[in-house]
Image (cartoon, rainbow, N blue to C red; front, side, top):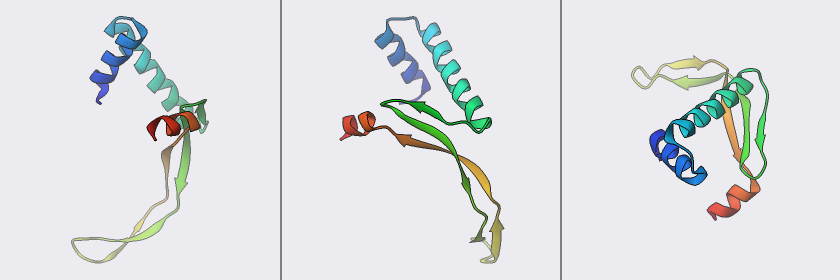
Length: 90
């Protein structure tokens, strides 16, 4: 499912216009992004938790030259599915 399909599904489920569904989706995505940038965790009970994790620096190999390279540490977005979402998938 892509963004347009998600907007259509949200509009149908909530019985709202596609324009309102797009605004709502954009607001949710922006709010979650802003919270993660600020280092906060976003928990949606029953759905899951968005958080920021850290990857340590590590050594990798350049596939073209086979030389070792250093891959720097960085922050990554993480999602852990909630119990209800996990149960509904299985």
